[in-house]
Image (cartoon, rainbow, N blue to C red; front, side):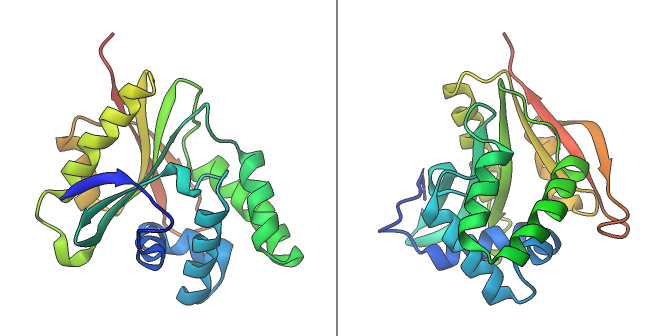
Length: 202
């Protein structure tokens, strides 16, 4: 098993896109299309395009013959909503882009924690269902902590949906603590996220 930077030529981008899609089904369906194939193809376009929060430069994979897990992460110095706007404008038609601007901004404000310049943000963590329960999630988080340390960030942060109890347990076991909650009833009925942080000792 190996944790490595995504390589556009070597790694299966369809598998990577599908794993990313499965981390936030409702969010991606509301922003990138109704059908799974349309959404995963748009995620793949964002990956290949780069210079956005889902760009290839922000993705690591866990490989064991094939891709079995992914991590999308970045420091607060590396990304911005403006970069995402420019990327989505390139891959979506104008009407869908306007929808993304309104809904995407609202989701970002209401369901996602604010990422400071000294923060390292875990955007998406996923493990292939066939390989779950084998410690791969913990392996990804251990490597994420190392990436954040290498980036000289003061804390590692993430958002997890409130009903994802398995992920919440995994993050707590790995040293993350809940510090805030985010609710967006009018966008996704009954859904919200816990903001969690892992603080580095000075």
